[in-house]
Image 1: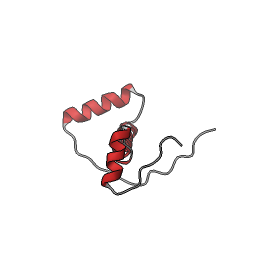
Image 2: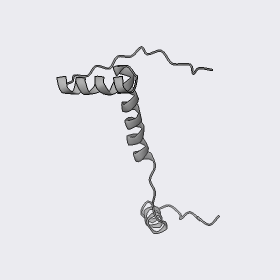
Image 3: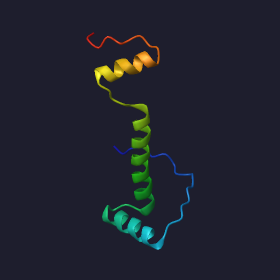
Length: 80
């Protein structure tokens, strides 16, 4: 069963130095992908990582309590 792929109907243009283009072409070839698939795939992974870092964070119990007090929220009972 193959995944249904959304049509690619949007264009993103970038400019690159000859060195950057050669590097991207070599890496795409080494991974058996087109340059477009390589660029979009790696850019998508990086974009998801960047956005996740801004949505999720971890904190110690002490740091979380301080954060909650600063924003005026009632502390959350972590034992439940």
